[in-house]
Length: 143
Image (cartoon, rainbow, N blue to C red; front, side, top):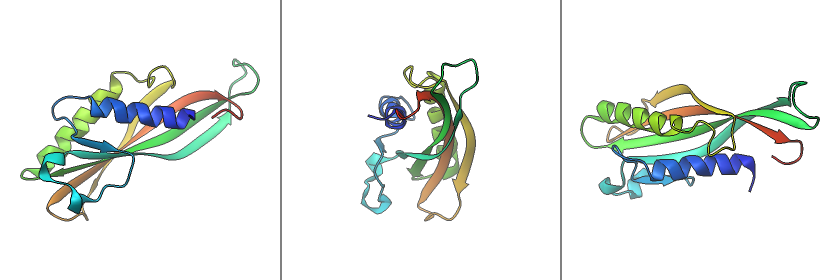
């Protein structure tokens, strides 16, 4: 498996095993909100995003490269007090991912870089996206 997949799967696994407000449904596949029951919320779609790669510094052995790639957690809630639920899930996801910023020793660092709220979503749901920047070092041709 690639380092990108290892990191993304680590995030899925940690969110699946987290506590209150526990994400009930965590996936890397597209979420169809209309087909989820109320018992499957909060739901989170974890997907890998853009990546920036560069040669590593002179301090690293030859052939090593540095990468920063984005992992986006699309968090969905439903019911009453949507804004409160969005804020709670943001706090929970950030806490879970801050506990081990190395993604199980695969990454150098993980940091939350942006939180955006989707105001255009159906009023029955709330959506907030968390963009995490994950830095890792890899050998050229092995990422």
